[in-house]
Image 1 (cartoon, rainbow, N blue to C red):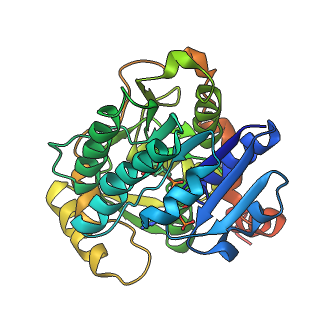
Image 2: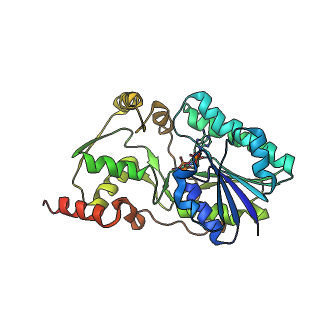
Image 3: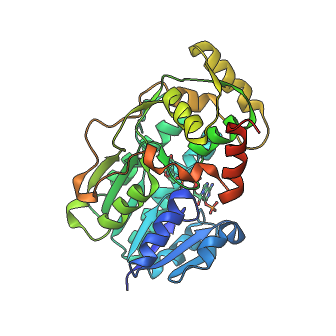
Length: 311
Ligand SMILES: NC(=O)c1ccc[n+]([C@@H]2O[C@H](COP(=O)([O-])OP(=O)(O)OC[C@H]3O[C@@H](n4cnc5c(N)ncnc54)[C@H](OP(=O)(O)O)[C@@H]3O)[C@@H](O)[C@H]2O)c1
């Protein structure tokens, strides 16, 4: 039995990875801020969910103490510069310190495609800085970094967000419609992590992870509408209207559709220069794997079929 701690394991990617690893016989510990929010993991044999403040160094040291491997998936998409730095730069450093104190050598870190300390987006800047810090520890730890493009699959907050918008309104304004992405399925990302854990050839390496095909954001929104059988008018916004739209969305309380920081990140194409790394298998195509967009099973499908039939 190998013990693995997945920091950020209660999120979209983490839940998929935790269940893959538990099925393979690993004992997985998932710290979270709110245990009740990840009920689906609580019932999985081999997965232990613990409520913890992972920014507290002493707590981290305790969490890592009995582990063979640490995986960091913590990331935020919206927030202040301070919040981005705390999540993307300070936390990985603290995790690596806790690994070193406990003699845990194996550390896998989630970055993002486009991570770049010179980016105008603070998300991308801090992901880039986090990567640099992790790479600088490559002599004392066995590190591997993953940099996925946008990730899709059941529970994602990207294509599901567009699905929700398209279900709400017949006309949808779209910022940065020409931005390019190469979506990769969550199961493929989780498999890459799982296969890398015990593979010494991945030590010291950073891998870009993309799906088989490049799409513009406008194409992705069209595919989501077609999958759901919705006839919608999508109005692409030019660059200055896209920025204005992002600024307005920032003012909306609650879950953010978009921020200016996301807008800046989208000014650089989010695509890979090479195919999915062969050692991690074949990536799933997007269009054949969108059934999850129908939401809550039969009722979700029924409402959409009824709308498509005009009844
Ligand atoms: N999803 C994508 O399309 C995509 C693309 C490229 C890279 N990534 C990266 O992949 C990683 C996982 O993404 P995801 O989509 O699974 O994200 P997610 O669903 O939002 O989950 C993020 C996880 O990070 C934890 N977290 C967030 N803010 C935290 C904070 N301030 N303190 C402590 N824990 C915090 C959350 O823990 P709690 O359980 O406590 O809430 C949650 O489990 C992130 O690093 C993200 O940047 C994602």
